[in-house]
Each structure stands twice: as structure tokens, then as C-alpha cells.
Image 1 (cartoon, rainbow, N blue to C red):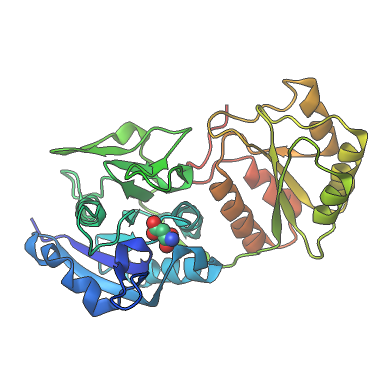
Image 2: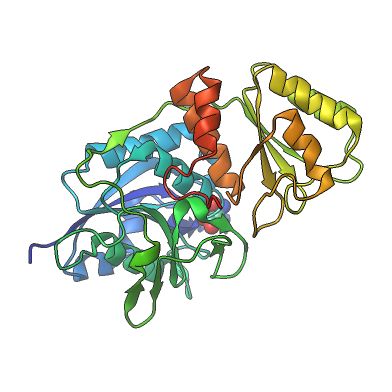
Length: 345
Ligand code: ASP
């Protein structure tokens, strides 16, 4: 069997940080320091190459330009490698993985995000295991030579998740991520067990298509008891606003105050797209189930079903970036699962 080739694209994050000798604070390692901590890279039968995106950054500094750069790097190297591993800080990893799942249409090779809770150079670090397993998953092929997991994923601790279904849930535990509404795609123990029935496969005959246009003119409006009309009004009147993620209660419920309904309806009438996303981690929006969500339906708010905030934010940016002012088409695609990001009952 030919040797599998994997490209590791490194952006920074804790996985590539070291303790500064002078200050004792964590700072991004330079590329040479980083390589010195993972001699194992040369010891597998997978051919691994490193592509650093420098300077390394904390993922709190990641923005859509970084998503475009990452997607472009995968696209440019697509034919040269069998799979890709992206080293990324954990804080915004779920956003980046979601964004790439939309930007890389017809993906037929693995793109595995991973990171760590402890820096690569410290004792007990989870970095090496996460990295080694992510490389193995990125290189894994079936008996026909096809990639086993040809989607954008996140590998952390012992599980492989669909990227656009994942949320960071813990700032301390090694088990830092969870996919609340979709099963994990693989489990790593002594062996790596893959679950093909839940993996997303797209049409192999279609070529990879890159989409890097992003529209950042969106906002998140989180409801809470006592929310004021001024606050809602201010958000819905942001200049240039195109779409709002409305974080509602439970199965998609909101206060029944008339002013709220009117503010939302006025915004929809001005062509602003409002998507209802529950504040609950698990479960789905079901508008119309309770009286308290009927107002939202009547105002023209659309359902986000069981999508994560990370996937919804990036899906909106991607759709608005690509489709511009074609609001009906954006709304149509928001009601569809493009690459497994939500379950439509
Ligand atoms: N602040 C870090 C980052 O997201 C945390 C981590 O990598 O775990 O870049």
C-alpha cells in the first residue's frame, strides 16, 4: 500500500504554546520549538509534513480571514495529500471547524481539527495523543482506498466529532468537547473504531469547491428574563445588519410581550433574517409547540432546528457572503442541512 500523506496545518493555540522562561506565562512557541516537542512525528509510517501559519495565535484571535486562509491552504494542497490535520486553540475551534465544513464543498478527504488543554511541552500534556490520533484518522482509508472520514471533524481526548456539531463544553477537563445532538463518528481506544453509518459522504464525482466569501454583518441576541425593549431595538438597528441568531428558551420560546414581537417583525420586514436557536445545549427548536413561540413564527422568524450556535453563526456568514442580497435563497438554505449540521425532523 502506498504511504499516506498528511499535511499538518498549525495555527497556534495551547497545543503549540510554551512557558516563557522569563515571565512564566504561556506564549506561542516558534516553529522550531514546536517541532522539537513532537519527535514521534517522524516515527510513524505516515508521511507527515508541517505547514505553519505564522505567527501562531491564541484562537481567541481567530477571525474569518483565518478561516479563508485555512480553507485556501486545504484547497491548494488537496491533490498532494490524503488528509489534513489542523492544530488550533480549543476556544474557537468549533467555529473554525464549522466554517470550514461550509467553505469546502464536496470534501472527499479528512480535515481533522485538534488541539490540547495543556501545552505541548509540559508533563501530562494531552497534546501528543491528540495529535498522533488525529494524524492516524486523517490518513485512514478503507479497503477501496477511500478516506474513512471524508469530512471536517474535531478529534479530542478519545472521540471524533463532526466539526459543525461540536461545542467546547469544559475549560479544564481533557474531555473538552461534546456533540450534543449528533453521535460521535469514531472512538479511539487501543483501536480506532469508526461508525460509518453516521459519517457524511458527499458525491465523489463532484470536484472540491472553495467558498471564501464571508459576510460578518450578523448578531447574536440572547434572551433573558428582564431583557429590555431598548436593548433589543439597539441590536436590531445595527447599521448594515443582515441576520440575527435569536437565542431563545427551551423548544424555541420567547416572552410574549407585544413590543418584542413588533421589534422582530419590523426587522424581518426590513429583510433582516432572524433564526431561532435554543439556549439549551441539546434538543431542537419546535416553533408552535408552545403559545410562547407562536409570536416568533408570526413575525417571520425561522427555525434553527438543532443547530449549534457555532454552526449557525458560520452558516449565516457563509450564505450571506456567497448569496449577497438573495434573502429568499439564504432562508431556503437555512432550512436545509448542507453538510450534516442539523437534523430536520
Ligand atoms: N486560549 C487557547 C486557545 O484557544 C486555549 C486552548 O488552546 O485550549 O487558543
